[in-house]
Image (cartoon, rainbow, N blue to C red; front, side, top):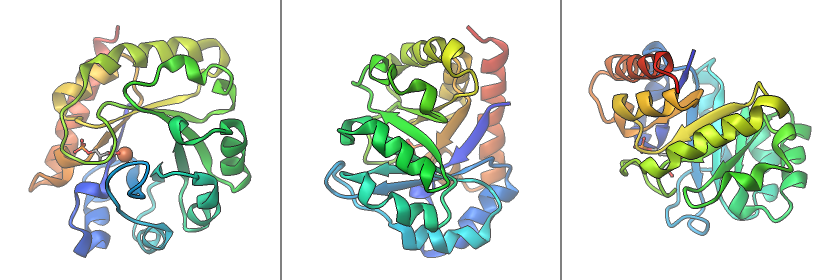
Length: 224
Ligand SMILES: O=C(CO)[C@@H](O)[C@H](O)COP(=O)(O)O
Ligand SMILES: [Fe+2]
């Protein structure tokens, strides 16, 4: 089954605890947390202290997407704050193997994120070490942007590269996911779908999550 990970970036930060509870009650599988430093991306969001505050309000896995320079400096703090999954951008990691193993040593599952313009081939040496690959379907930094369809081929390429070497790899997509793009990305092999505005921008979160799930399931059935 495809997993839905609502991104709290589009939620109401003044009532984060209730937003997370509503997402869980609405049928979310993971909670996606976007960490931005104003350097790797133009926006600034949240730090480990906030992850720690969310942690007691949900039993769902916390999926932390680090859009920051020098992530090694902060990985231990995010792991300690309760992150279950920690993903770093390939573009921000000159020593990617070391960074991935640092995440694992800290007890979290490790993901690598690729910007839309970064090819899947950069994953080749590290693929067997990964728990997750996150493919950005927008340029990172903001919620509510339009899905970039050119990334669809990359989902299939990662799936094919992982088939022999890491068949349990999760392939996550992030940016511009709605019921239609959920169907497209799931049909190409995505297993985790992040959705910010398509969940927290809607009045009824349960209905919003169900609509994305319905799209994803239709996509899975039509799988390419
Ligand atoms: O990492 C990011 C943005 O950089 C995302 O996780 C956004 O939060 C997705 O928002 P929507 O495109 O779904 O509104
Ligand atoms: Fe994200």
